[in-house]
Image 1 (cartoon, rainbow, N blue to C red):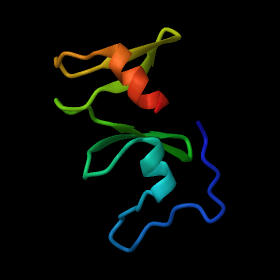
Image 2 (image 1 turned 90 degrees about the vertical axis):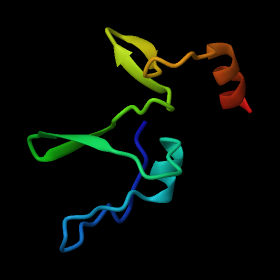
Image 3 (image 1 turned 120 degrees about the vertical axis):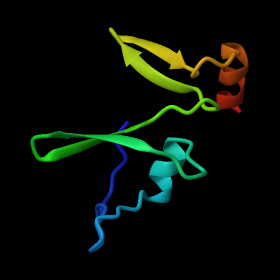
Image 4 (image 1 turned 30 degrees about the vertical axis):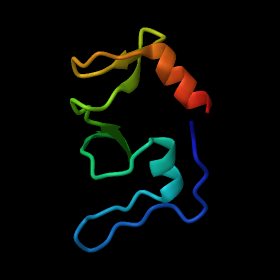
Length: 84
């Protein structure tokens, strides 16, 4: 998913970036979280670091995989919630 950003994201003098609301909403982020950062040429790829209480979707070998950090996960309920 690519979210169009007309003005982009700016960095302050301390190196901080603020993710716009539409990006946080797309990632379902409502509280402080941690990311890993990987530099690829002139791009930076951020990835959420999974926490014990958060299920995350990842792609592995072309399949969508749910990682839960060891917690039980009800996929049918998650789909129902996402659809609503």
